[in-house]
Length: 107
Image (cartoon, rainbow, N blue to C red):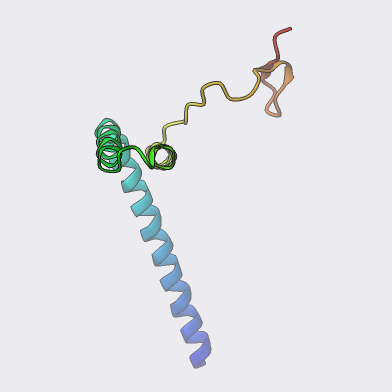
């Protein structure tokens, strides 16, 4: 076996091990996030309040957006579907690609 082929096989093994380790880490992080969602919400709220108090609310808008992104990421890791309040128009009629019915705009 040539040196390049040997190195290629070792690299393939290392890539597979890294893939497995990353999947395990993602799974464990998701479990952790799911078990501690309410605690995380409290931390996000306290951190936002702390920064707003220290900066006298100067960065309230960007801070609120950053907090929403962080919460969304936490929920995504936990496997929680995001809640979109007031986004878009409800649909009625027709069928989805998997064959289930849809609802549509009220008229």
